[in-house]
Image (cartoon, rainbow, N blue to C red; front, side, top):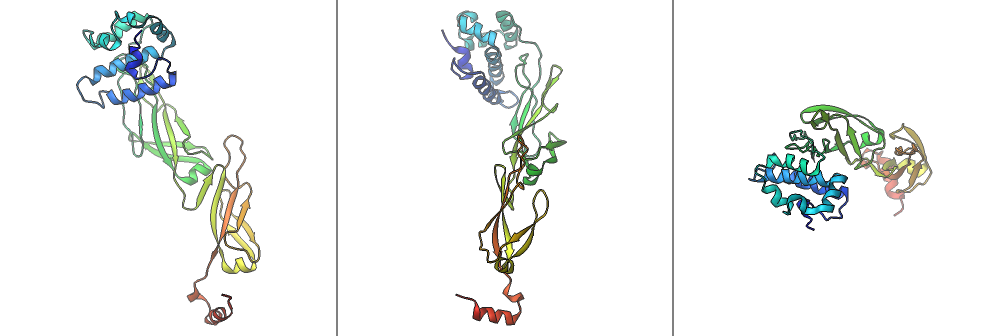
Length: 296
């Protein structure tokens, strides 16, 4: 038995539903007539849609797996589709063959991404309504917003949208914005944002823990004292031990990122670095004493 439907989508007969969907999306992007202006792209796109409509439906796929190309008069699917008097008739012909109906919507594809977004979506074409109405896109958010959460405004398709960022969101997580996808047949999909977190000049993040370098005055490092530190939760005062060395690590328990599942905060690790004074701002007599008395 020929596996022409699978060949149309470039997958094996044993492909999973996810593999079929991924292959379909890739080909739909390539041949969509709004994107591909080559002659024949529209017919190829309809053929891809028809193949996906069959293989994405368990009952239709089972019928095809059982009867194969005999359902198309013994022709492989490509020849059968191309041999139709009009590709517009393909919908009706396949509806009759599979007796399940493909749903005659005639929805139109819409696309377009506002500043900083990448993505692909579609809402069906030529009567085949199997395509996802959701729009997938990428969005960058500031590091501090990812840690603390809050509202963040984005521009999408010329529209200013206010989205809510949960605290502790991770790079690569997705946010679903209801009702901002494509529309077809009285239905509207969602906008699905894949989050990319911008780097911070001050912090590094490892899971729920944060790391930060802190400059400590030379006098405090030598003789000990207290230093005020700004954190995402609140300002705190830490104690520096006498004769501390550069690179000394200080752990602030519970001052890291709040885990979205457990609600437990990670830790903030401070790495002390000596802040040397400007020698030109010191008392000249002190400079002379230091020059003479400091060990080599």
